[in-house]
Image 1: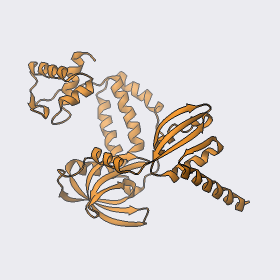
Image 2: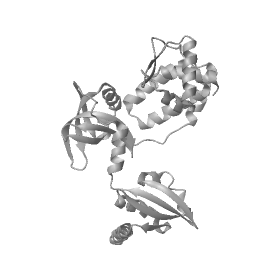
Image 3: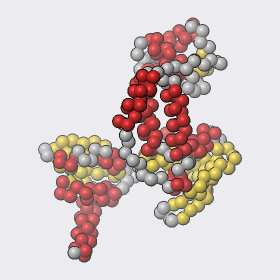
Image 4: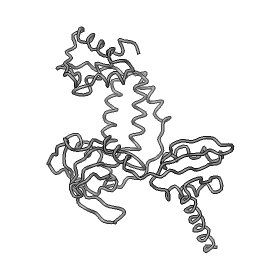
Length: 316
């Protein structure tokens, strides 16, 4: 990126939030802090009213850059985002993003509009699991509550206990893993942080109350804390090369860490809390997989194999 393009991009970046740190700009543009300081001075000399707070960052003072035309590559990236949102967000987010995308498309050059129209049917994301109707309009409300620090009341269904409880929570953030979205929040009922699956929220109500985030963990801090306190067990498995190509995506769901080629096999290392879940997964590979460790996983595999054998012997 040349300097003129970087100066324009910095100016756009400064409009995205109230205060922007120099370190944030340096990381985004792959430059040194000294270069960012020079760029800021150049913008100031050009008449851009940039304010600064020592030790905090830069901000714009009553200044807004006129709309900037998107490049074809930027427009194409938005199309990719739309495809992902279509499958991984709920109706509340999909509707808002679709509205925003129409506005963006309206300012594109005719050739770029035609490019997106040709590209659209050629980019697809696999169909997402069906969302329960009571939880298909919640993500936008949850996002709003996070941004405004609003206390939420949840009617939450626990699949483990088969019961629904009322909870007042202070939302920390939204996190997507496994097969869906999770609301991380401080639960006032349990007086601790909890992970609520959004598709198990039967009803969500804004209480009208706000909370202070001063003593609340941030989402990154919560996730780091969870990783540090998890009781993870190392699992080492050898897969025959014939099946390795079939598990490139699945392996990440089971705590994949690393791998190495050993003859006709690939030795993979996993760190997991759910060794029995790994055993169920490995059954599908039959004799194309060998468990090196732990010994308890080998015993679990034997038990499951016998259960399957007995089940089909009874059916015959």
